[in-house]
Length: 304
Image (cartoon, rainbow, N blue to C red; front, side, top):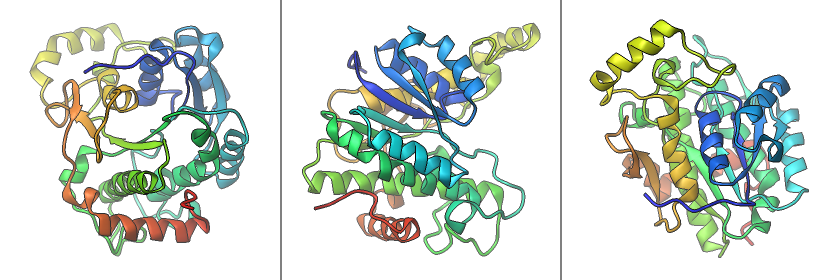
């Protein structure tokens, strides 16, 4: 899959101080991008930046998605600043709380952090994306959406709480809103595009070392090398998991409803694939978008 060079382009990656987010940032930096590492910890962010190609051209943006004051401060600082060519909304809660916990905007915390806090950041930072030619916004979904159906009536406040389902609802909502965002941007004639990607299934044991941020023991590294071929169809490393988001940001021509994921669904090279039908539903998109805007108390983007 062809990838465009990103020389001189400024791209925000949320959660880029570790995990898949770091490898998204690394891949984009290798293509010439100036990365804004949006993360809570300055120490971890600086360690990650030191590992990126030409580290001096990248910077840290303090962003704690569980803290609305932090989200609004970070979003406003970007929105009032120079053009931004891309936003990868990667960060979020993976291991949901074992019991129901209230998060941002008074909803279930996994959905509040993974979806609504990102939308609040997007709302405030959007003016900087509009200033750039052909900017892209990447939403992060999950293959889990194909295993757990979307609960349109309970995605914000489930009647029976289960951590795995809470995570799945957040990823369903991220996909639904990501596609709805692109439809609305297209209708307004905006040059900004919204694309959805998902990373498949990834584990640390198969992830290449980036010390001191990530370093496997000699035993784990040896076992991973031996076992990798046997597990290639069910799990991969986080560097490979980053590739769909990188493809979503860099593929020169993308169709409507573009959805990038690993070739097998959970592993493999990135390719255009098909999400679950609920993610593409315009009616459901309008409904979930409206519910999100009501909670934010503001339009996510201007449509005039």
